[in-house]
Length: 126
Image (cartoon, rainbow, N blue to C red; front, side, top):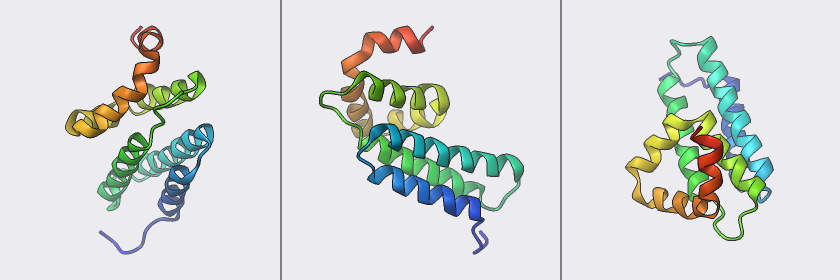
């Protein structure tokens, strides 16, 4: 891999780091999504980039961290919906890969998801 990291990827990583430090879950989800979109846009414009594996690793690492830090007590419906939409609609392949390969993260997500399981089936299984 080249030593030079493109500015878009540096910015995406900063957004990811910032998102994990936020206590406001709406902002956390928005920053996370913006960072991943920035990374995906870069890869779309540079499909043969030497940074592709690095970018994919960053995305998976921060998605794991996001799952690890999910709230589990008294989850507001809006917070639940924002996270669930992010995982199920925007990044389902990455999300499913992570939770199927890490029982601890799967348990964390299941505890988070248990509050609104019926609503999930209504919104995301249709």
